[in-house]
Image (cartoon, rainbow, N blue to C red; front, side, top):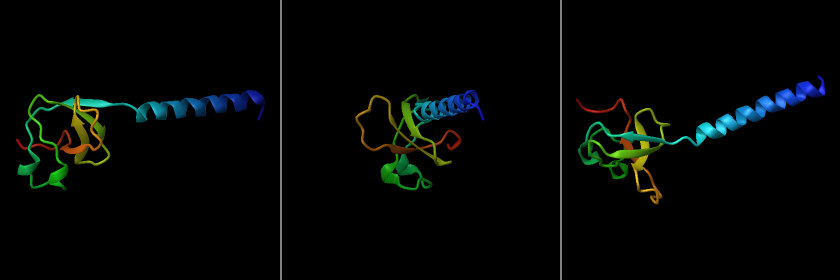
Length: 94
């Protein structure tokens, strides 16, 4: 392998690392399409961590790692130290 090949590989690795870092820092904001009260939900894993919201509220999602429950907080509450649980976009009563 010559020096040019090593530089090219290094550039590709650096680009991929930057892309991963960029994607990890993406933030998602969602507008609630329905109202939700964790006290009335029998499926939430921990009612104490659930976030109550109303239709039209803007929520800042910080984790989508669970397939059913996302971690989020109300937009404008950036000083919150602990996020709460909200149902994901496929999880609402019709």
